[in-house]
Length: 426
Ligand code: EPZ
Image (tube, rainbow, N blue to C red; front, side):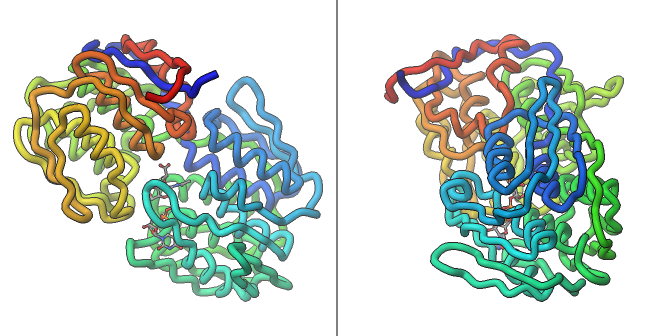
């Protein structure tokens, strides 16, 4: 029994229609918000990815019944509130588990959540989360790797979420969830504006919360006595959509993407347009047509509505084939470049200078065995394999399964030669 890997024969032009799944990064905090609610919650269009499974297991340990149904819907109901501890062995595998901190503290008045530590894309500090919980009046201590928090009742507060790299997406989620049941008004300054934060706020309001300003850097929450479960559909995954836009372009193909919100991808589409790629809305879908000549460009990752860090690696793969030199600067996770060495193994000419990578365009990439490291770097290597001459083997694809649902099946359905195999790591 070996490790799973992708075997890809490059060169096929992708053509056809792909349905974009629900957004993993919207589903995770919304699932965590079930801790706040009385009664049943039904979530539709939940992507069946490993991260959703991991959070489901954690929520079950926290006394939430989680039922996964065949139609991509989840049914969640809080059964008991005895356990409020998120163990290290779960948190170290998925840092997003930190988003149970706010709900546990607000609803159960206590929480013990392991500190996430670092990961492939760099440090994952939670100082802004901790500071926000303290501003709600909680006692929060760091005890041998755990965040231990308790409070009689949370009080509405002025919470500032600005850090050295801008705001914090899950920090905003935690602060917003804690504020829904806190006493009085909370103002969250320098809140994250990502669509996934807006989706969480819209879900909480449907459960009876009183949140305004979501999608802007200033969110105002008026505490309410309780929240009731509701039925809700998760927004489409803008990162998966962007990944498939690159797949269409890099293979000189043409894809129609269903369940895709262009308003969530304006900065990405702006950069694709500068490269020369046409992205058009066509009857509630989006068509991406490739171009022969790819213009080199400069890109800097920013908090939403800027260029998303989660699409940095995928765009880098495309720019490897541009006619000239491009520059990518990573302002959110400055170490998020583990895909650089692997792409160079495939004939790319990338040079890292601190938080910047200089990309010298080459005529083509050549297939090789490569190693996935984090979720989005893995996607970048699959994209490289789709256009490389010869065969590419992407090892450690458990990284990609964390955030993309059946990506090999979706790619095969539009003409890619990609297979999921098992074998010893080479
Ligand atoms: C969310 O992570 C996403 N994950 C990430 O996507 C995404 O890359 C990131 O936001 C940025 O958009 C989920 O939503 C589950 P942050 P999050 O807190 O919230 C620093 C993927 O591929 N920071 O917005 O953990 C931090 O070090 C994943 O799907 C502090 O300094 O990211 C980083 O430099 C990867 N102190 C920056 O802020 C804190 O307390 C942004 O981090 C928190 C964060």
